[in-house]
Amino acid sequence: MTPEDPEETQPLLGPPGGSATRSRRVFLAAFAAALGPLSFGFALGYSSPAIPSLQRAAPPAPRLDDAAASWFGAVVTLGAAAGGVLGGWLVDRAGRKLSLLLCSMPFVAGFAVITAAQDVWMLLGGRLLTGLACGVASLVAPVYISEIAYPAVRGLLGSCVQLMVVIGILLAYLAGWVLEWRWLAVLGCVPPSLMLLLMCFMPETPRFLLTQHRRQEAMAALRFLWGSEQGWEDPPIGAEQSFHLALLRQPGIYKPFIIGVSLMAFQQLSGVNAVMFYAETIFEEAKFKDSSLASVVVGVIQVLFTAVAALIMDRAGRRLLLVLSGVVMVFSTSAFGAYFKLTQGGAGNSSHVALSAPVSAEPVDASVGLAWLAVGSMCLFIADLQPQRLPTLASPIKSHHEGREQGPVFVTLEVQRGPGRARRRITSVPEDLQQLLRFQ
Image (cartoon, rainbow, N blue to C red; front, side):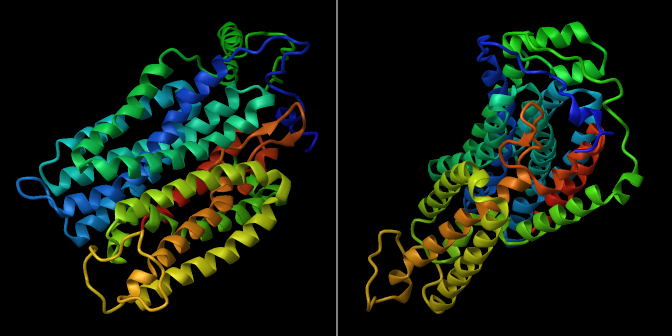
């Protein structure tokens, strides 16, 4: 922390002192905003159950061939990259609340277009719209949550952002187990619609209102969210500064920036997005009879270990978890590759291997005895990826009151020693790169 950074040395919203009762409405506001990451996760996971359904579709419904299926899964990331740029512009000009309200519209519109799709181009257009909303939501929701939360719960609520993403993915997998692609798209309209409804009754963040010189509204928002103004401190004048490229010459900014972007790039290139977008297709290619169930198992493991990683990260340390998870991921992906190699030459459809198949020393079909090798290796891969995913997707959260980080923080965001607006501009760079690297 340096003395020339007044935003870091003086809290913008001082925590109420004494024993004032906290309002629980801050949790409702955080839940409303977290429906954006939930919708984001649903959009990411939607393609996994939808692609096999669309490949089996009979005319006049649109039907996907292999090339179209690949585009259907990946095009959402192109929209998300554009959404990251749009979100970075909206968050400082339109405000956090309005940005979340606006991003709910392309979510609903995109899933509505998919529901009404009569050809492949409508399907791709709907995915592009949902991707645009994903990019905005993934950038704006963490900012809104971190700015409305009081220090005691800021880390907890910030950690819930990535948890809501993986819950959204699991929800898509579970619903896809019983729903066809059209009804699954209808379900996808529900979370953003609920977010739109709830956010209409939530206030703008006090921080943003203060930057707009709307002090009375900021105080009203504080009372609504925290239940008290006690301990209020006015922000220092000029806390929000413009971002200049010259800031990247500072070692305290460019070093963590390079390290963080590199970690994020390696994580995105690990193959996790192929698993998320095409989980059911992958298990069908692996000759699973219950490919939908296998995808759900992977989704459950992802949610559980995201929560575990958030709980142990501060105690175990980021570096240790990153090293251990990287080593285990190497072995798990190698095991899954070995499974495909061992099952080559078997039956070429997905009707032969069930998850409940017993492991036998001399199976009639090698793929039967190795069924759990595929599921186990993918679950291990997803489980050990979570310590890496949490830092790359969580919001920049720092407790000014306690002078330390709370909850998982993207290493690139150690540039938070810079001015507030500079942090958000720099953050938008790895955010956009992350979405582009997801295009697989």
